[in-house]
Image (cartoon, rainbow, N blue to C red):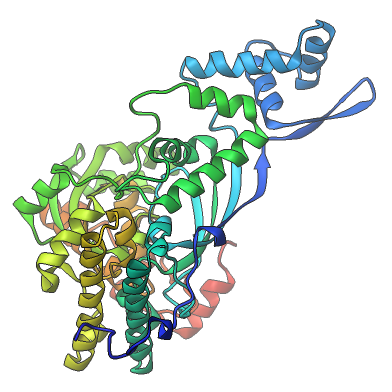
Length: 498
């Protein structure tokens, strides 16, 4: 008997899931800029982004105020709309990205899937705040179903049945005392989420272009992402139609700054490295143009000198991690990242589930919990296979794979991420960090130390760099570096920033 059949005998109407669809997704504009008000001849005039950015751009050629520029254009008798449109078109054609990076959008994306947010939080120049599954409980009704899977009764039944079975396993893990951040590994990417996104038009441009490129029929790019991209495009066109159209008409083969996109046809770029190196994390390359700890340490004492270090040190790693951990890791935006096709990761996991799934330690300690976990994860993987065999596109079926699936990423760590208190090693080696990301941080630290001991000795958790623990509760890690107790911790937090 297939997993889940015993839960729902007989009628398909016994399924418990009530799932979200494209109609439930909301892309809401919270704010935008730049927009401002000028005073001209005693009259207050509101300038929207198209006009304000164009006037500021024109102002790079003349030393007059924005109000004076606006007044001169009006007095010249020219068509202001045409002047603004021409400026954006000609400037964008010459490659001036400073225009599209000047228009900023603050967006709220509600009731999308974690499959979608896996990409939405990827552009490095954006900022993202997302509903977390580490602490909050995922409700049974909190799952998304892609439209093409929802349109056919047989596919919908297979999909909904396995979502219900996975949520049952998740609930049982919680009842057994497993923390939500570990129990979530058994949930599919269909889990619903919401997030706040802040960035420039240039940051979100890739989503708009991909929505036009893929439409609703791509086998690799989810239709949900196309919908969100279209909505963002509609917002941008409404706020700054001239700037947005000028940028979208300036088409190149490589239209945006690169960001990690797992939703593409499988290729051999990263897969060949996985085949060659396997396991991991494994260091692929290390470069340091400095080889003295005292020189680096002295530079770190002075912010004006420290910035010189960043391009002089680089460590490149091939890292395996669960989709749950990757979702968190990709938000560390200062680390250039490339990721393999998610479909390659799914196929590898299908062929060897024991190697392709990452099981949290709290679950791995109990055979009974491991059996529960593996049964649910195997059921989701089997559903992925059945959906594709039944005619579903991979971009629809991918929603059903568990967040425990192992995916490989290549990440490049510079001096900031190795040595700064707010860099990757310092923040992610902290005991409050997610356990899997923390393991990666310590492994990166270990391998860098083997390659360059003089650099490794300068690396460490944020309490090492700061001299105190900034968390609400301190842990024993700081005792590796200095004596510390509750009273000192209290004083440190009270004096923080003084």
